[in-house]
Length: 325
Image (cartoon, rainbow, N blue to C red; front, side, top):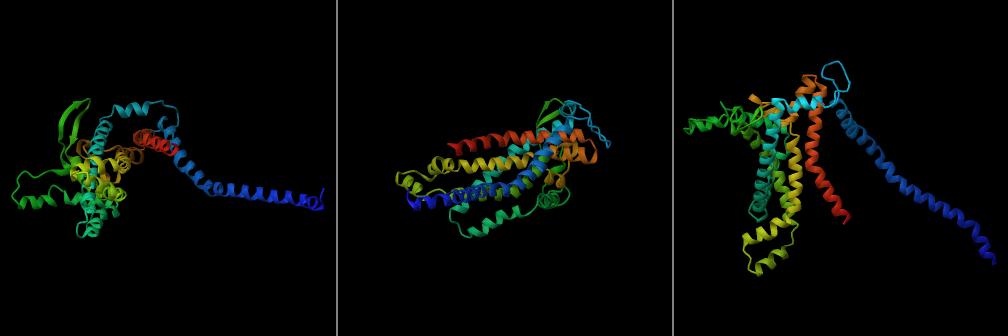
C-alpha cells in the first residue's frame, strides 16, 4: 500500500465527523428557531381551544367553578334559545350580503382604477383609507351618521322626506317567515351594520382585485382583441375566470371576518331590540363575561369555531392538494 494512502486514512474520519456535525446543526437550527412559536401556538391557541371545548361540556355556569360533566346540555340550551336562533339568522344574512356586496363593489372599483383613470392613486388611497380604522371607530362613527334622530336623517328631513328610516333601531324582518321561535328573513336594522362593514372592507377587496388584474398578462387581452372579442366578452371569458383564485381568497377572508364579527356590532348597536342585530360574538361576550355562564359561553365559542372551520378547512385542503400536485 502506498505510504500517502496510509497517511490520508486517519485524517478522513475526523473530516467526515465534522461534516456530519455541520449537517446536524443545519437541520436543528430551523427547528430550534420555530420551536418557541410552535410551543406558544400549541399552548395559547390549540390549548385554549381544547380548554373551551372541555368547559363547554361542563356545568360551570356560575361564579363558582364547577367542571362536572354536563354532556351536550349547554349546546341543547343554545339551540332552543330564542336569542341564539336569532344570532344564527343574523349571521347567515349578514355573511351572505357582506361577502356579495364587498365583492361587487371591490371588483367594480378595481376595474375602474385599473382602467388608467386620472387621479388613480388618489382614488386608490381614498378607498383603502377605511382599512386604517378599527371596527370600533367605524361603529361609533356610523352610529352617529345613521342615528334615527340626527345624522343623515336631518338631511333627509330638510329635503322633505317624511317617512324617515329607523336604521339600526328598526325591528322589522323581511320577508318574515316564521321558523320555530324566530321570524326568518333579513332584519332591516342589520342593513345599517352592513353599510358600515362594507364601507370599511370594500377598499381591501378592491386592493386584492387590483393585484389580481395586474398579474394578468396584457398579451392575452391583445390576442383576444385581435380575434374580435368585445370588452364585455373579455371581461366574462378572460378577466373573471383568471380572477377566480383572488375571488376565492377574498371570500375566505371576508367570510371568516363576518362569522366572528364582534367589535363593530358591539360598538354600533349592541344586540338591538328583539336581538335584530345580535351575533354569536356579542352573545358569547355577554354570556361569559357579564352573565358568568362560562359553560354556555364556551359552547357559543366552539360553535363559532365550527362555523369558521366549515368555511376555511375545505380551502386549506384544496390548497394543500394543489401544492402537492
